[in-house]
Amino acid sequence: KLSLIMTLHDIGFDKNEIETYMKLLEQKDTDLERMNILNKKRNDALDEIHFHEKQLERLDYLRHKIRNKED
Image (cartoon, rainbow, N blue to C red; front, side):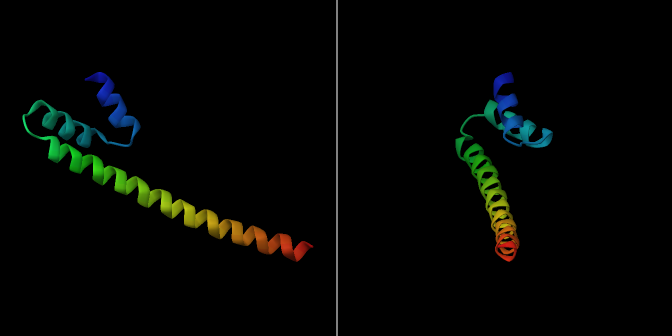
């Protein structure tokens, strides 16, 4: 259980989310609910990645403008 708690923490779960997940784990037939929690967390992480990718694109564009101006 400790390993799972550490994994959940490492992937971004807060204390309440970990508690909810662990309570569900102790119950029967909660695979779908736990999968939904994991899917939501995964989708949130992907949204954040895409946001940072857009930030990088904008940064690179500004860097490119400066480089071309200096040439």
